[in-house]
Length: 277
Image (cartoon, rainbow, N blue to C red; front, side, top):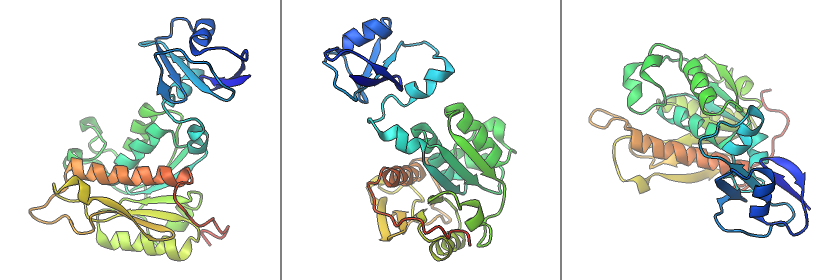
């Protein structure tokens, strides 16, 4: 019988139990995860099961770290996520939070783009640190993502995005997250993707300012290749600023939708092979 143990295929006996496997391979493990769920009791394993054995406080070797980081994934998820490529346009409150969430999930490649630098007012909602003030957001985010998950490949572009460079920069990412502040920039990237990048899906956001109720932020499918997250009403304006909780809720709606698209839980049109032309 073949199972996956710490992301490695191993052959075991036909009637081996979880505890017997632990005793044979890592008797000092005090966390045993079976098919994505921490298991305290003993169970008989089945062909194709996935098991992760962890000793608390132990720093694993590099060849095991990625498997242990993804131990809580449902079986089969990591392979799909690892093969995925996602673009993020803008690295402010939305984009930086989406990037962090997707890095923790284990996305294979993130293509990130922003022209700006980290400044103090960003720190109330964006995923940067005081010592990064003055750094370009692209470099700061690459640094942070490497600390979170060194197995994610990050391709950074320090550039003002426009109708001409968006198809080129995001040609290899079937899913693109729109994370701009300004309405005209949001409209520009949405129309660019829909008109010039057939088959690409754009996950946009609108209406997430202030501190309104969490449940008014929702994910809506507008067309086959366009989704919008937010309440589509709460724009930033004098007297209604941008706050970490609500921005974070919207960003995680976006990240969760990206994951659902990768796993085939949302319908999307296939790439035509003509993107970027």
